[in-house]
Length: 387
Image (cartoon, rainbow, N blue to C red):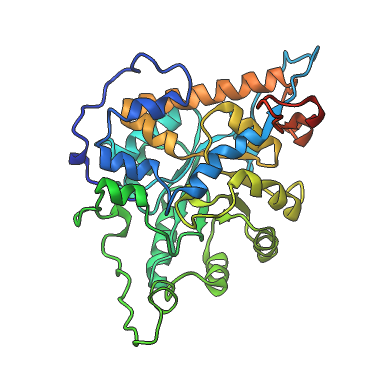
């Protein structure tokens, strides 16, 4: 996400959780009074007409959760092992850029909140603070999200810096080489200030403007001129000392090809509806991707999660863990690091309540059999036949 400098947020960030935050999704409502309207429109919006953004949210209503009876859950937990590392729960924070948009402490506050709540953190290439500054306050549960740069030597420098700063994996984003503008943000008057620069990219070469002939496409020969290709992925896999994950996967054929190439794991994602408007909802893409890579290959998921119940459904449909995007920045805007930690706590407890009511004592017990297709009858109520 792009953002405005810290001066754009005129309201001071409170040092306590405001009244009215009873569930994770409440942070979205509370953030509206903390973020200037044009910036909120940009953060809350997707690409184009928000078709995919809305599909991401609507997809959770496709499923309801079977309650189960008489299960012994006294040893229940939501722990997992991901990439050889023990995590207390499957709630991770997605990479979000320029977080000084909503809080002067930006990603530093987010890292502190994630550490306090035991959450894994994915640091964006486009962060307001450098990856080294973030590493100083973050827990060891940190990964670095990479956008390949126009010059390979700059990408290699980012990679080496992440390795030196103790990041545990590289998450390569591949679905955002070209993006549709957000109509909502344009109509709200959002503009990215000229002085809004990613801290990690200072000193690197900007994209060179493509000199186009009259018969050439501004998209194909212009914007896509420096988009990543398979050779770039192969180079990164060969040069990295860290596991390489790929974010932005929705097609099963891509998933199979990436696994065969040696990618450590995938993130099923449509960039929060901010890339191709009209792409399938991440939740609807997830089962086919899981089927393509098999039961043991690591999959993360993002796309519209607003509650622990949403996370339960994604985990049941094949994800090993979930990434939280917009809710993270909303909580940051509302209450800084405290808000981020509180959000993660709420999501974890909501997930564990859902697990308990569904009779699941561990994440390993979650699967498609926990869910019932939520087909609506003429009155809008769930029909017994659907289950």
